[in-house]
Image 1 (tube, rainbow, N blue to C red):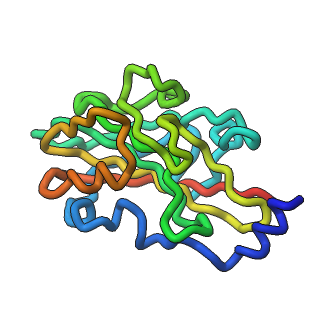
Image 2 (image 1 turned 30 degrees about the vertical axis):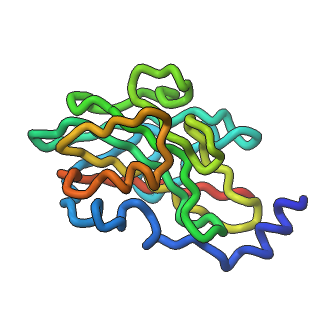
Length: 188
């Protein structure tokens, strides 16, 4: 009940689309060539409850597939952000680095365990190196969750799980291509 009251009180507050990693200068200059898809939801459609965060759903990372990875790609990075969170910056749900450039996707739940074999997980806004599914405030309205895939011309190496800002700080001149898939989740 308290969450619903907060959601209504903060209804007009949103971090903003323009604050997504997608619009960071090192990212926005790259062409949007990558085609990113999910078998769980289509562009602009509802994200199933199975992929919603703890306490709301099963918190399973959705299966994803992609096409058009450009030649010369050394690493793929996946970032998931909520631009509609009532915060100064979008809420980071996932940072996954070190995805093999030869891969064509990730199966469902691939990013749930810190010991996965698909990527190195960075820290989300909770400070944890794991997938955190959608958990919009009840009554706040629909939230858009942006799954952003970046193809890099060099591998980024981190000694500890990076935060999104650490990743963005290293991207100058590295992004060859990008792709995006947006899903929607709302709690009433």
